[in-house]
Length: 131
Image 1: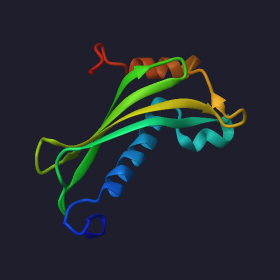
Image 2 (image 1 turned 120 degrees about the horizontal axis):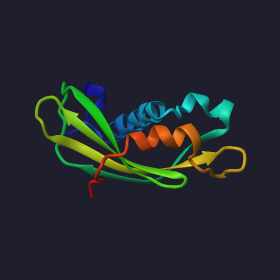
Image 3 (image 1 turned 180 degrees about the horizontal axis):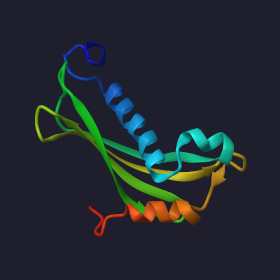
Image 4 (image 1 turned 60 degrees about the vertical axis):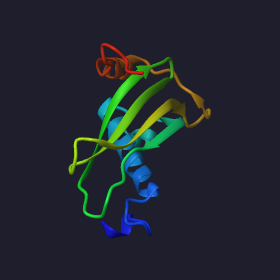
């Protein structure tokens, strides 16, 4: 939309980041650890690393989607990648690698990913991790 674009007529980086941020919330829900349960469980996610690459510009009117894939699972963290695609081409317009740590909101420390959540996340791991 026009309000997502900057003075040069392409989607502004802050709006691309917002797409990735929204996709992170959806991804957490798909893992079985959605943000809506933080108040009940006392467990959330803390992003500790985000690396964004802007590859192709997006113009006003471009239809976009974000796809996400899990890269790795640690004791208390996950790494994943978001790809933002334009429907105008098959190319990735921007991508973000992210590392998030399971976070106990009471102790303010990392929490182990275990039990059913670990099983859900493990099921999403690829056979080979891309580098």
